[in-house]
Length: 372
Length: 146
Image (cartoon, rainbow over all chains, first blue to last red; front, side, top):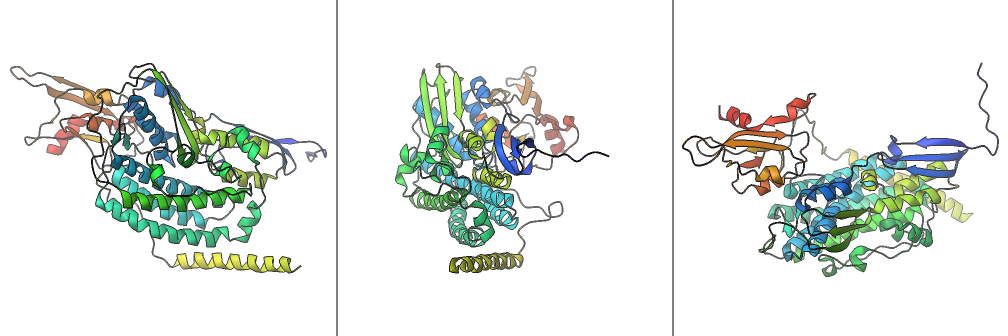
């Protein structure tokens, strides 16, 4: 007979979560040192889906790298492409027509809504509720249909070009987008009634996993993680780019610092994104979508360039060091989730494992984006 | 004490409200389709793998300039052509697409200034053999002609 395993009161054991685990939403591995149900120490292990995007950036020419950006973050792909095209346009002095900039902003915001919807569904599923995921996916499908009708793909878009876009939007898209906004607003009310008000949901998030402002700053967190902790920072407002200064929108900030605050920030962000889309459709100017004069071969002059954009997951920075050739000398991708995730190790010490998994959900991790 | 009971009441109510919403959704029309039996029409800009475009006589419009080969980020395209005796233009003799590496970015179609390649609408491409994804586009064009 085997004797039962007895743990001494102060003895800990190691629990391995992932890399194949439904709660981590991807190939993230977390080594947790546990004392009973409480976490003593946690260590996130990344790199299981590393694809050398930065190296590919050095080896490929500028237009050839366009499609890589959307493979970084498969949920909010357009935001990443936006950063890349803005950077190369800035470096090589290409002027983008106004219509193209407006369409870009509309697309990025729609993509942000789609990304937040998927996060919403998956987050509630982490906490044990399945039907909100189905409702969220139903709304998300409308957005994907719209984006597909313009870009030609549903998830990994290759739509932005240096100087503009590859396709113009048509009346069908504008009609669909106009119909979508009120429908989505109605759905948001439904989600708030179904999920935000739910007592079980609230009890599992309220006051759980407090992240102080200092900790967010220390790790360089951005997006809802920072804004849920009272840091009013949004690249669209603080370092305006593209046509965002033309839009009237608010940056939702919550001071509760808990998981619920991060949830509320994202839910409010959906509403703000809808406002931007609405204004973008109203203001959409006519004209070309590609500039008349565009260099045939993209060769930015020697220099060091940086561009930050606000993607669905936070502040995405991209740095380009050019030696004047047709390939970048160095292309550094600053991924927002990478910073957001590293909070986890410190913040979850002393937390119960169920709370830690709810906390991980509230960080909105997309693993391919961390590993790039 | 009052707060305690109010919380129990509001908590219970929130669960009933949630149940009410799921109950309402239950009677809404189905939005999914039973895929292999029903299919949706693909959007007009759907990007499938590339296909050669033929001219009025059924020959490929390609002039073998090789721009698509150069534009491809993943080296999927291999093409060859030769000048026929007495002819002026090059004639396409081979156009291979390695679809295992293609990421459907559309750079090749954009780079072509002769309109010689276009996206197909095919998406049912599952196979257990890797060789099934090496497309001989010239052969496919001839099969289409028949």
